[in-house]
Image 1 (cartoon, rainbow, N blue to C red):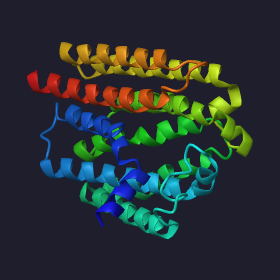
Image 2 (image 1 turned 45 degrees about the vertical axis):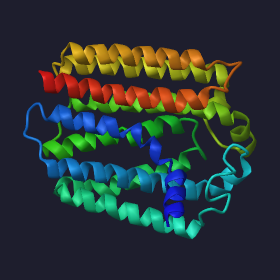
Image 3 (image 1 turned 180 degrees about the vertical axis):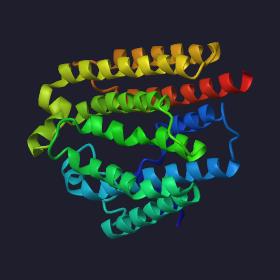
Length: 285
């Protein structure tokens, strides 16, 4: 049973939850500037995040299993290698989808009403590489719903400033997903799959990724003004800027070998530094 749990965790790359969850928790902390947060709501927000991401990643692995089996980089993934069957993966997706819907229900009628449409948006990403090179942008959009959803779950209303945190996540995710896709440029082109690297080449893809991360950094600066943050947050934002700069210095047209390091370590650090900066700034102020 333990081995099965570990296999499912690897299949959905559970460790990568660190990319989006800190953004959602940051939205909750920002919401706490004006309302009294409820521990029960925070609990269900975290459970909803786990449910949404696990079901979406599981769905992606099921849909892309045939391509993963052909790609040398992904052929050892759990479904192509036979460690987990497709039927068990489908059951996994259904269970975590139900968990997400249940969590949304516990967070109120508005969240519950949007739960199925949100699942549709998350699942639809798995088909985008089949018809558009902008699948990276769509992925960023889908994941950027996390802080927006967390804000609405905590406050029970929509407020436009939170869109800048979602936009920061959208451009952040899109930018590093383009970097990650550079590893599969030749495979995507040979299989008729669309991506920015396979369509425009590595050099232009890296430039587009840099531009997206500049926009992401601009959104982090905007949050400083929109939520009247203090100098602790500003210091955290400066660290994020340095991390993004280092990430793009690590990867170039002639050396893509450090993409996995840049992908996980740098991007998880950005999310955690953001959360730490917002939490420390809010608590101390």
